Length: 107
Image 1 (cartoon, one colour):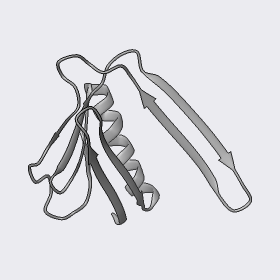
Image 2 (spheres, helix red, strand yellow):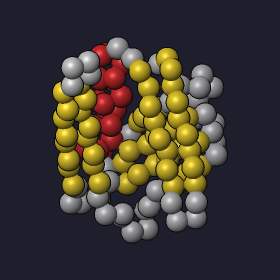
Image 3 (cartoon, rainbow, N blue to C red):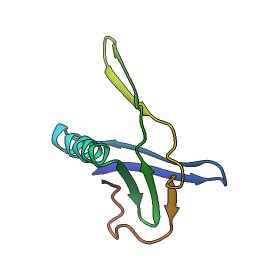
């Protein structure tokens, strides 16, 4: 994908990966399908170069959708959250996920 911005920030109690990109509809659908597949499997992984964040999906899942329409722009925001799964929390490793520099959203 083009115009890719990914930032990984880690603290002892807080791990975060923020992913932003621009692409055509098919490119974005591919990312969303990978997220849905990971959600079904109970494990979502986001990786960029040597940064990797793995989330174990817990239950219940809180699901929020908001939509906005303005004169020149339309927007939809989707947020999913769940309680952390004990003994299997989020992890960040430093192994090289991809040489190309593209983000990997996989299950």
